Image (cartoon, rainbow, N blue to C red; front, side, top):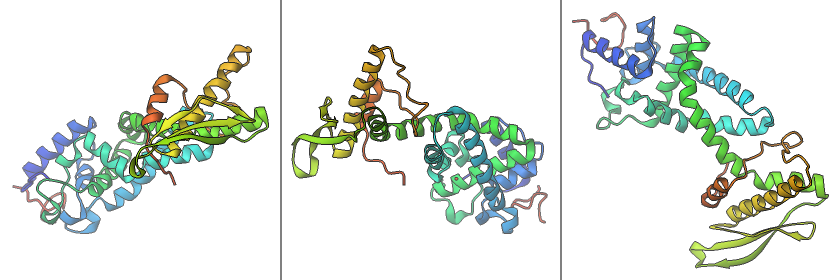
Length: 286
């Protein structure tokens, strides 16, 4: 947490913050409020709590818009799962750290743990800043600020979820093309009980596809499903049939490459289931 004892120091802090954000506020008092946690404000209305509430909605809008255009073939449920990760408190805190927000947040001394700001406060301040930029410069300003930070989070979240979709995608394709539901056969398991690995193959309509190893059954089944999809798509390509199955798939199709196979092999279980002074922020004009 920065040490701010007077108005001059606050001005310096706000100037540095704007440089870090790559956005200049027309209303500098608004920026001061964005950075002020309730623990350091004269009253709660001088804190960023209301802005945090507003910023959460702006963030959701920008993320939904980006997902809608980026994944035109993804169903609502898939978009919702990606959004839930991207707008989470953990992701907001991570994006806050990328703009060094911890250097500018104004919190009470009781919350300054040796210069470390709790991630929940960083996430809330980040959402407050989103609202501040929106109020100061409009939706386009908020979008321009957010998208460079959101893009890698969206790609990472989408890739993680796509790797979890190989089984769902294989089931959809198998039922549509072969009239059969995939089964998964454990061919081998090795290692002690606390650290077993499993060798599993996908079986569709009696056909056994190449097996895959995994550190748990779920991981091995996902990679086995990927192997089955690879063979089915290769066969379609050899027959001159379109290899893209996005149009009739209820989920977004993961890119099936050697790199995605390696990533899937290392993926662990993943469950899907943010007045004494002119501003009023506790500093004196001197």
